[in-house]
Amino acid sequence: MLDIKFIRENPEMVKKALATRGADVDIEKLLVLDEERRKKIQETDELRARQNILSEEVAKTSSEERNKKIAESKELKTQLVAAEARLRVAEEEFDAMMRALPNIPYGGWLVGKNETENKVLREVAADGEPRPAGRGIK
Image 1 (tube, rainbow, N blue to C red):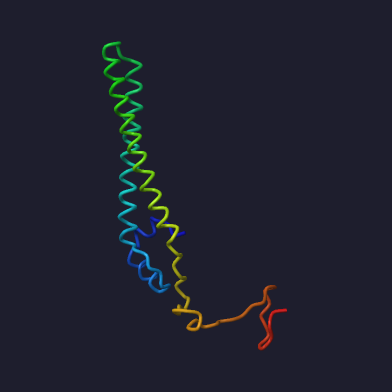
Image 2 (tube, rainbow, N blue to C red):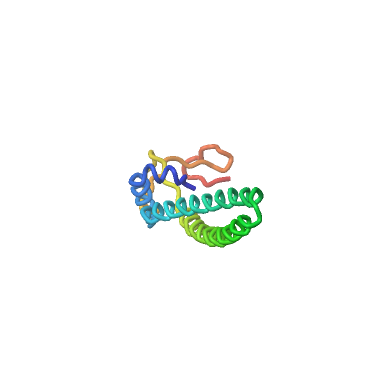
C-alpha cells in the first residue's frame, strides 16, 4: 500500500505511474478525502481535550457551578459522539480508496498494456536456477 504522505508530496508522479498501470484512480478525490479525514481527526481530538478539561473543572467547582459544568459536559459528549461517527465514515471511505490503490511500478521496469506487450527479461525456475532455452520447468 502506498503511503498517504508520499501521495500528498508527489501527486503528479503517482497519477502518471498509475496511468502506466492502467489504474483508474482519482488521486484528487483521495487527497480531498484525506484532508477531510484529517480535519475530522483534529475536530474529534479537540472535543476530547475540551471534555477532559471540563471533567477536571467539574471535580474542582462548587455545587451550583458544578451543575452548569455537568450540563455543558453532557452537550460536549453529544457533540463528541457525532464527531466520532463522522470520523468513522470518513476513515472508512478513505481506507476503501487506499486499499483499491495499486502500487506504482518500479522506475526501471518496462510497462506494457497487457501481457503480449511486456518484454521477458529472463525466466527462472522455481528453484531459482535459470531455465534452459526451449525446456519447461522440471
